[in-house]
Image (cartoon, rainbow, N blue to C red):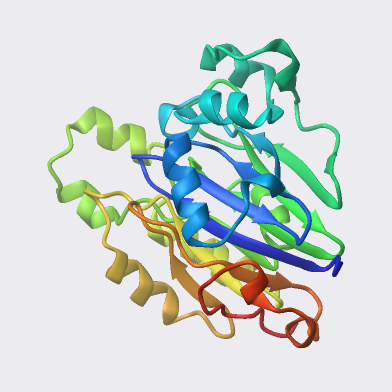
Length: 282
């Protein structure tokens, strides 16, 4: 097994549900399960990704668009669910005790050859966390539902060979849109969501030279536009492939590696029926 290669996909990203797949050739994890078990199965099947490789669920926080499918999925596949005590308290899960693992992010969780670490993020939830998934020297970050860019986010983003990064709203669209004032303040007030401009600043200032893929995630249906976001980031992309994670469908599977020779040794079609963009050299 190539311990420097990860396969990633956004199965859904937005206020209607979030679920992200990260795995190697042997095992995988899901970060959040905010769409139904059936939809997760259907989308993974279309990508030729096997649920038998998924060994654990990691939950970022208790909002419904991140947990809607957790109970059915965990029960059906006997998956351990890792989440902070505060998130657990907010979820009200009807799950067997043996499937729940309260985890405050202070230690690394090993899922086969995958290493999952967490850090606390700024968001209006009880005890929310962002995640890093590592295989060998390859690191993928899952950074959504962010009220602001904090020091920990910056430090982790700087290490990523790929990242799911929130670009929730365009400031002008939000300010001039139909949302009530209290909701606009909730989104942009420092504990809600990250704007396009804030995400772009993080990308421009702190990206790793080997950041091959940036999956812009959790775009607002009302206050953002995928084409606007793509154009904004592509103007600064350099060697990074910019992907807009859909609110309604899965992305393709992307091959991520810190090893510049990974593409010569890896057959993407073993993991997806779709043509894949291999990681750029680092």
